[in-house]
Length: 258
Length: 281
Image 1: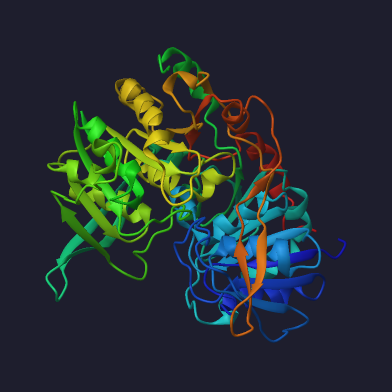
Image 2: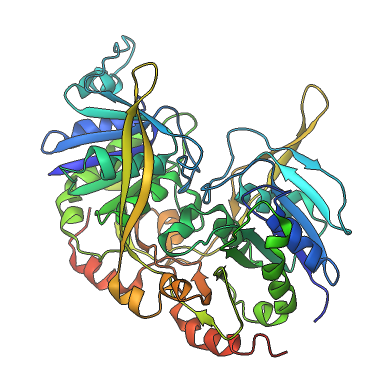
């Protein structure tokens, strides 16, 4: 495969072991640049910074990989990299490696998946990579996943369509025999919160644990959560266009008018 | 009906007060607002690192401006007595999650209205909009939701711009609540700026617009000589007539059904075959 210009981005920060492992693995063959947030941006979704300026700090060069840290969100990193930091448009954006899976409805609050979608919006082939990692602080924990991506990049790259983002999740133990093209699992969420009082007597809430009642059909058939539980690597194609074309007939009959 | 108005703006914005007051004539209205205007937050959550503080305000009173031409419209906050207003120190999606998962658990809303957004949510804006993020969160909880957006105005939407927008929502509110779009879909509505209700050209049910947006940053130098970049308003080329941008630009109210299930089903089979080759090269 020809060398690609690859932009690496993530939500946990530009020095996170997941992104560094990936950069080291890819930089042998490809031209790689890291543009990541300076702080952890977990759960930032597709948030953009508009109210205040962004700064790009350039740090040391690691295996020919330039590292930029941005005081913004993952999607800011992608947008700023494309507009100002990179000399030319990248061929591919890889977001991750995230140290937890991003599947089902959680993809929209994930900065990792959203950063990949931000790339797709700007017409660049993009993938998001998440994995179940046991020791999340150690770079070596991410190396097996990074190696798979580096080795199989050609197959992955060729299978990205325009306006489609690939969301890839790795279970804790994976083999090539267990790879599945999976749909997004849908369902109804029941988040539970604890209501507490702070030292000043004011109420605050904190998420206890998200409980999701997933669509049974999805869980049993093609849903990403189903396959991840069975230790499959899942690849989910996410389309840009969120229009639900199936309801246009209902809408025409709805009587919504001036 | 039991209606939740969720806004990513501060409670004292015109858009919040006017909408709440208009709907409370016939319905029971609860307002979830943010401590400060929180645009472009998408579905960001704060719970990972911090808890969320909530203030409940049942009566808000602010003195009416004497110079205002129409006292009734500019002193809205004062007229919101009796409407429960919650003010969140968090991201908008947290607010929605706590409203539906905790505060309104025992009296779930029949309809969730997210807005009124000061600035349109067309095409790729759908991904970064706070109001769309809130609506998506409401859909996760199995609620019916609509997003209402109108043209961007510096600072705050003026009562003149908001009046026809609210009139449209008021007129169709029962239909929105009755509509069965399935468990993953909500309506994203963009209303053009008009002087009078009759100036709307009509309602169009549209497709989400294309990815033709450029995100441009303005470089600058701060007083200490440091270089910075500031996001400009996203620029986009003209798109087709039949999508949300086309309808909006032509003066129509654009109504787009948005589903969070973004799986590209056409690709599943082909991708499955391609993935079988992995590890064999």
